[in-house]
Each structure stands twice: as structure tokens, then as C-alpha cells.
Length: 275
Image (cartoon, helix red, strand yellow):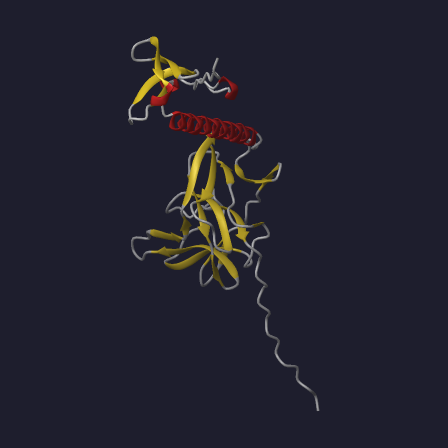
């Protein structure tokens, strides 16, 4: 009696459920054709198989069957199913981890970032409207009267104390539907600039010019968004902001990417020697 091989792509050992149509096997023949079978059995001098076309058991001489090609394709399909099962398992684990993470975000409006196993609340920065004559703290609920000409929306200092290596993923919970963005900050008189502001003469139209970084975002819950940059960020100073266009009412949570550069040293006037 010959050695028997019973093969099926149900692949019960893998724990993978395969539709009946997908479980069919191609039993290749040496003339280049094949029989579509549910399973087959190799006997001493023949191959017994269950034909899916004719729904019955049949036999064919072993010398006509290309077993090597048949078994090779079966192994490839089994490997593909193992990889698919692994990928699905990893995806499900990642989704469960993301759901657990979202549940840990506080309900209070604000910006948050993940630091290991902790959710860290980001501090709202103090923003100033600066023109050539005055410097006022920006209060979202009490907009500052704007004068014609150029102004700057600034935060004190050249560097944020909050630093990231490169690709921050930040959660932003809003109190109401509002615009939000990542902004790359510039410099002005030793401070960080969120945006340049121009008040047009006569019409008094306010033109805001933030340097907005392209980002992805998704809604993760009630008024909760996850935001991350589309491309790796260059070293520099940034902020995630909530604002109304044309209202100069920007709330800012600042951060830096990469190590903070050393502050420039102020030159000292040479001391005078008394004769």
C-alpha cells in the first residue's frame, strides 16, 4: 500500500476560516492543465481526488500528475494565509491599543501628547500681539483692537521647554468646533512668531499669515482629534493652535523639535579704564 497524503486548504491548524470556493486546490498535470479538486490522495501508482467540477471521486495515473508544482502552490497559499492571519492579528492589537489610549485622554478641552504610558497635558502658552508701539497679551474672549499696519503674534523666548524628537502625535480636545493646525514659528526680536498680521488701511480687513504645516488628523471621540504631521518635521519651533480665521484669537500649545539651540549671547560693551 502506498503512502497517503490528504491535503486541504481549510488549514484548520492555522485557525483560519477559508470560504469553500477559496479552499479548492489546483491538481496540476504534466501536460500543463489542471483539475480543480477539494482534496487528493497519492496512492502507489495513481492519484485519487475529489473533483469540484463533477462533485465526485476520480482517479488518474500518478505519472500524469505534476505533484511538485501542486505541492509548491499549496505551500505558497498556506504561507500567504499565515502572513495574512499574523497581519490581521497585529492590526487588531494596534486598534485595541488605540482605543485604550483614546479612553485615557481627559475630557477637559486642551492639547495632550503621549509620553510612554502617560498622557501629558500641554500647557497653553501666553500669546502677545506686538506692533511698533505696544505689546498686549492676547485674550481669546476679548480681542485686542488692531491698528493699521504690521503686527506679530508672538510667544516669549526663542525656544519651547517642551521638546520632541521628530514626529509628535498630539490629541486636541475642543470645547466647540473650531479650526486647528500645526504652525512652524519664525523669529522676531528674540521671540517666537506664530504669525504675521496685516491690517489693511481703510477697509480694516485683518490678514493673518501663519506658516501652517501639512498634517493628517482623525476624529477619535467627542470633539477629540488626533493630529500628526504628513512629513518628518525639521528641527525648530512649532505650535498646535486653535483659532478662528480673521479674528486673531489663537490659542497655542507650543513645542520644539530637536535640541534647543543655544540662546545668542549679548555682547558686552568694553569697560572703561580710569587713568
